[in-house]
Each structure stands twice: as structure tokens, then as C-alpha cells.
Image 1 (cartoon, one colour):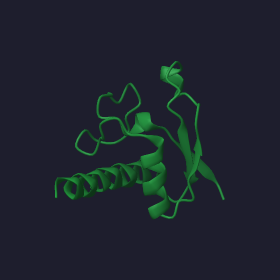
Image 2 (cartoon, helix red, strand yellow):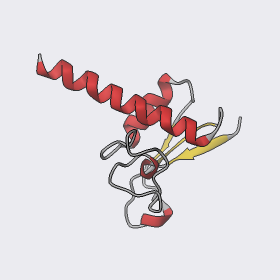
Image 3 (tube, helix red, strand yellow):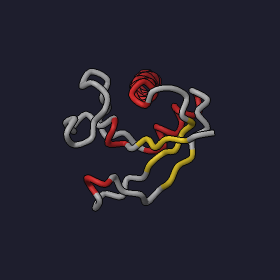
Image 4 (tube, one colour):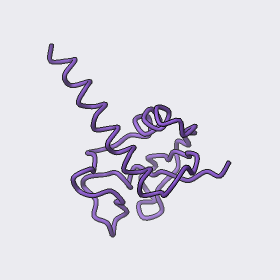
Length: 99
């Protein structure tokens, strides 16, 4: 199976498209972590594999890590599904902590 790389930069709300964000501003996530990407990718059956200590080339000093997932469609569509999944996951967690 062919794999593709998902960098947290692809989902980060504070970045511009030029800085690496792929998703729309509406779907972007504040400070996404590789663990969150992994969890959502697992729910989407993308067989995620986390590589910690890796740095996105444009920010080579920030070793945020990356996640390898199965290439099951267009990269933009997969990254958007992951971003939406992280937002939903955070909403559920924040609602459960409020109770």
C-alpha cells in the first residue's frame, strides 16, 4: 500500500497556504498534535504510523513530527477529513469536561 505524509502544518489555523496549510481556514485546527492526527486517521482506517522528531521542511527547527497514512484518495480530501475529525473530537472532549 502506498503511504502519504500528513504534517501538522497542513492543518494549523495560524498558518497561511504559503506556510503549508492545505485545509480551508474554516476547517483549520489550532495547534494540531500528531497524536490527534493519529487517532482520527485510525478512526478513518488509514493505518497511521507516527514518526516523532521529524520536522516540516519550511520549519526545520520545529520537530513536531509527522504521520504516515494509507493513500486512500486525494491528499486534500484526506487532510480535510482529519481536520474535521480533530475538531469534532475536541468538541466532544470539551463537552464531556464541562459536565
